[in-house]
Amino acid sequence: MANILIDGYNIMAKMDGLNGSLEARREMFIRRLGDYRTQKSHDITVVFDGEKGGWITESHERKQGINIVYSRLGEKADDVIKRMVKAHDVEYTVITSDKEIASYAENYGHTAILSEEFIPKLYLNNQIKSAKGDDEDIEYGIITTRKKGNPKRLSKAARRRRQRLDRL
Image 1 (tube, rainbow, N blue to C red):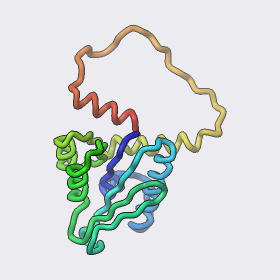
Image 2 (spheres, rainbow, N blue to C red):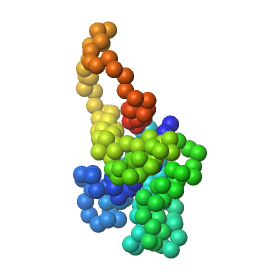
Image 3 (tube, one colour):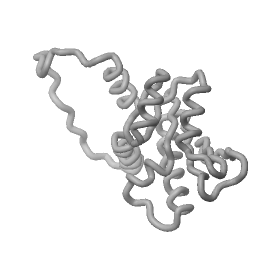
Image 4 (cartoon, helix red, strand yellow):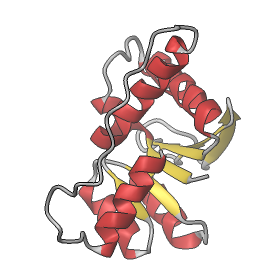
């Protein structure tokens, strides 16, 4: 089970199919994450900006098993994510397209994954959920022992990143 920390508005900006007001898009996004969490059983925390129109204090809520954090007025979600990454002993998988946050998380031993790499996992999960009732035959690839590709091994960080991405 992974501990996923998501830069909320960052990933929402990259997603298709989120229409309406900001609040409606946020609710649709949280609903999708809730479906994903139901399938995968990961602990998910989403951080949203409250920089321009938030509360005086940081607020927390829980919807569909998703922990939601709203940064306080004048504070960016980036700052909250950095604080959580630095303060917690939990090993997070940080989902963001912000290179500064990604490198910060990796410096503290966490894994950073681009939003563009995580979004297909969300959509794939929703497709699997809707297709569970179908009785179509699934074709499986032929497994061979013949090795292909470059024999050079990836760096430890790249292997860990790939392993985390595959688990999502």
